[in-house]
Length: 167
Image (cartoon, rainbow, N blue to C red):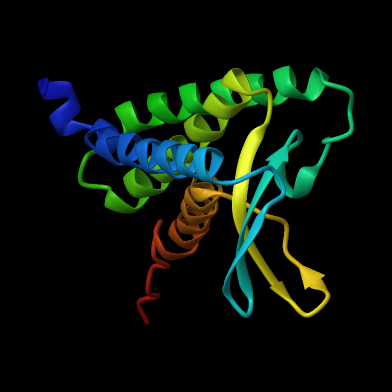
């Protein structure tokens, strides 16, 4: 590793690469072993259900006619570039932000890969209760949500502490 990498948040890139690999292999396994829309019961509230998502979160823009693939890919490239820039500027000791950025980066690249190669994102984790169904998602989505939650947590727990008043 270079000295810049050791001193910066770039040391967290290993996690982004690991998340990308786990996301890639879980999606490849689903594609190889399941038919589209096939569902495998795992728990009374959870199935593996192979689906294609042509849109963004909750299938937003999925019926937009195809332009959304390029639009969402562009957003993912821009966000990934920005996250790498921020990781480079971040001190390696700031583990909360480093972890958060790496999680979002790994997830963004995982879904970007799907959009570029397939034209859609592969989703397969499906939670439900009776007639209520949460939209299917994947490992990359979990990483993005986890990273976003950590960013929110960091925003509320770090920063300047209020100064005490001297009487």
